[in-house]
Image (tube, rainbow, N blue to C red; front, side, top):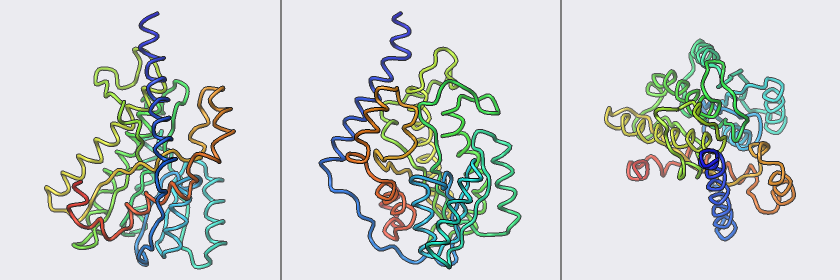
Length: 293
């Protein structure tokens, strides 16, 4: 009984209390307004999970600024619909969809191979896609879903694209890797002896672990890139609590409450995308002082 409480109940209570704190801070803080960003003509960006939510707004804004945007996602119908909407809004937009299932390492490798066959540069990689509080299950390769999708899939994607990012960056105009993070990392713990949560599954603990792993990777990658003198930066950014489909696996009572208040209290996807876009595009962040911070 006590073991079940520690495994399931405590992580859930911790995450919901953290969420309440974040929501209160959001409500009493000035909302980020994205300042004017420079044109991105000639640049290429990949946005995972760009078919909806924050990812869609990131892809849409980058396309408006002239970047060639590749929406990477698992749902082809959703991705192609997003491409059509962006092209209808911006007639000269250069945006296309490539299939990517982060729950399959083979799919990640196939996506990268297809991208490299196009012989394009890569200036911006936005690792945005993710899952939260999904039922217990494994990826195609046998990893716990949160750890496999949120962390390992993006880790492999970034690693396989790193040479292209390095070749595309230059002094004063670095390539950028942007990992869309979460405040949940604050209560996450890396269970090195049980990364796949097989000794007792808690969706809440698994999600927090995956976001902490993602943050640690982002930080370590940036240090290694700087140590090697490569024109690439790696950052993590928390968009806050945003009204997206990410919350669809909440406990039923909380999901009902969420449905009633989300549009009033949470940020819109466009507002959530502002911090991601700032991290990906702002010339201010070329300064090593900001990147190190």
